[in-house]
Length: 127
Image (cartoon, rainbow, N blue to C red; front, side, top):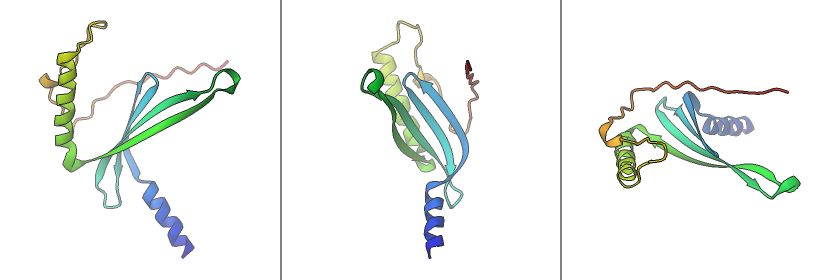
């Protein structure tokens, strides 16, 4: 009976990750994980991880706040429509004049069946 409990807990917490993408943005890192559930259906787990420093000097402690949302295939189109509208609203009402870049989500069609490749460089200095 105890073996069944252990197996069930492992099955529920460890879904198979079939694709993963991390996006570093300042103090935050966004993780986009495509996972499979027990029925072999894929979904996206979006995790925001934010570095939080509490205290000062020698008493400071570093921790990470994590927030997750799960996005299922039947909701992709509605989610993308809403996200595109929100980005367009920001683009129209608050352009990024300092860097000269603008987000033109209303002019771009984002297809969920395409994976955009992006090179990630990691520079680790060992002293």
